Image 1: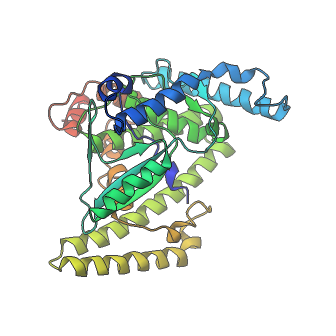
Image 2: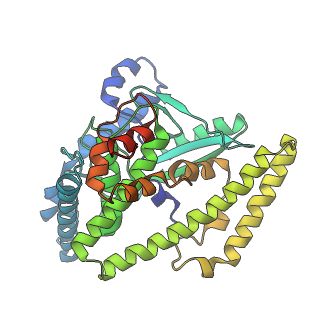
Length: 363
């Protein structure tokens, strides 16, 4: 199961360069360590077009040269679409490239209460409270996990392939992205650029749900416009999305079962015992019904995961059951540029969903 592909945006920190000076005197400062690592990547970034040149990375391999050419042209085309067709702020994001020796960018830690879906949050300057904390060194993420588990929390550590610096820096592309399909790359870039275009401090749930919806629908529109609705590429995209929807539906069922348990009057230890039984039974059902639920193999590893509240809470964060954005999109005429333009008018004051509805003339 490609669990990391479901979480494409984690603003680990913003304005790191501005914060480094304040942390210099503290050797253990989180921002100093992570900001330094991020700036190290940014300093290594080269112009995207440099991939078109024959160099030691390709070794003169014509297949690699062709792969680089397709990647550069695809990125440039997605950027044009995101900016010109959707109205996202593009600036110089995704015009630079970083060679990296792994297939993920950072390890991100999330945590939750063991007997409820009460998420643990960290406070950051500029962006406010966030339900995750990112590390470029996976060992640091594991140390954070150990600290949180000692506080009797469920903890989840996962790899992510991108995050947004919210316009403070020129977000680069990374070498592992060269193997991404057009749909996945479009989803990633559009998702990230939505965060760089619209970000409301203190509204993490709204920010993530909006970016998830715009990334998904934006990439669908891109694939339709470039390949056509009858193309193999377009059909393959929907096959993968159908599997994703089936998986999220299963997770929602599990979450609902656990929510009922947590809301009951049972003692905490009884809840914890019953929780493990519910999760184990869910894994058995998942394996038994896999062939009838899914077309591909991306989710076969689910039953082997050490599933807990911290992982499940992420699905609550990214995939709300009320389908607010999908419903709003339908009611406002399925016009994604108009939805994005309306989102740009929102402020920190008031309910962001009501603001967005009003901006679209639906309140």
